[in-house]
Amino acid sequence: MSDEISQAEQQFKAGYAALVGRPNVGKSTLMNALLRQKISITTPKPQTTRHRILGILNRNSSQTIFLDTPGLIDPRYELQRFMVEQIHQAVADADIAIVMTEVTDLKIPDELVNGIKQQGIACLLVLNKCDLINRNEALPVIESFHEKNIYDEIIPVSALRSEGIDELEKTIEQYLPYHPPYYPPDIVSEHPERFFVAELIREQIFIRYAQEVPYSTTVTILEFKEQEGKKDVIRAEIVVDRESQKPILIGKGGKKLKELGIAAREQIELFLERPVYLELFVKARDKWRDDENWLKRLGYHA
Ligand SMILES: Nc1nc2c(ncn2[C@@H]2O[C@H](COP(=O)(O)OP(=O)(O)OP(=O)(O)O)[C@@H](O)[C@H]2O)c(=O)[nH]1
Ligand SMILES: [Mg+2]
Image (tube, rainbow, N blue to C red; front, side):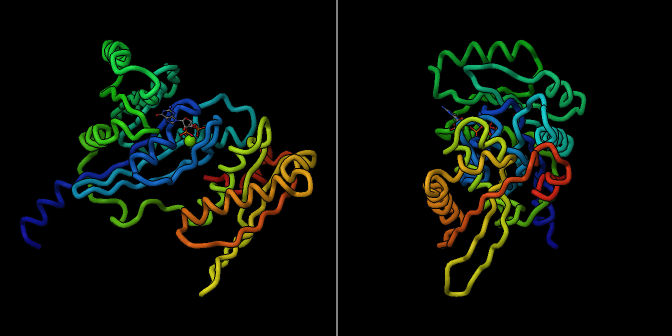
């Protein structure tokens, strides 16, 4: 190996950056903006993300592995306890914590920030949704955080409009440790395709249904069959946590489920870049959200 190559290798930076904050602040939107592609589902409803979702940003001289996490809440049932655990695991794995808040609603979970500071890793604050205010309104907010002296950097962005993303990326790179890449340069995530397919169906449920339905629903893939020269066949089960929710999901004469299937299929085809045949089934699993065994069987395990 020539000296030149080994020097380039020595100067390579790689590390894990956990995106954390309250629900709905735009963590998943920001990860997608940083990766320049949609990896994590985003909806206007809080508590959309349930798992720690890994997205890899490859650059010539660095690799950042982002960990998108669920929003921090006080857990009330087993699924939410799993979600909170995902946040703590992401922070424990991280070299950099990116704490996110909305610039118009500065709620930051103190306990989370204290944990990050105790861990001694870099702690960046991202003020998101800056498109909702004037530029000069952001300055006093940034200034007040500087005075508190908690965060290593304070970065205003609009994840939705991809504004401030290049600056954020450069800042993150500065804080990455020197380390060889953890993943090969051509992969963006490590979850299997069927995980993303289930997430895209769940995203449409969050968008299309009100009140408790999205929160009491999960999606599992029963079959994912790739066929040479023919459309892939995907059969997915939508699990609700009581029988009475089935008719709400299905709608009169199956209309709502059919619309859901069409919308989800469009998103899945965009993601997979190939046509698919999608079949949806609805099943009630009594109180699955509070049942450790069901949670494990439905994919909510470490
Ligand atoms: N105006 C504006 N809206 C944004 C911005 N970033 C995200 N949003 C919106 O905020 C909502 C929540 O975005 P998500 O990315 O799902 O938020 P999250 O923090 O991942 O939410 P959870 O997974 O529920 O914790 C969506 O409707 C987004 O379109 C932004 O920069 N500006
Ligand atoms: Mg999210």
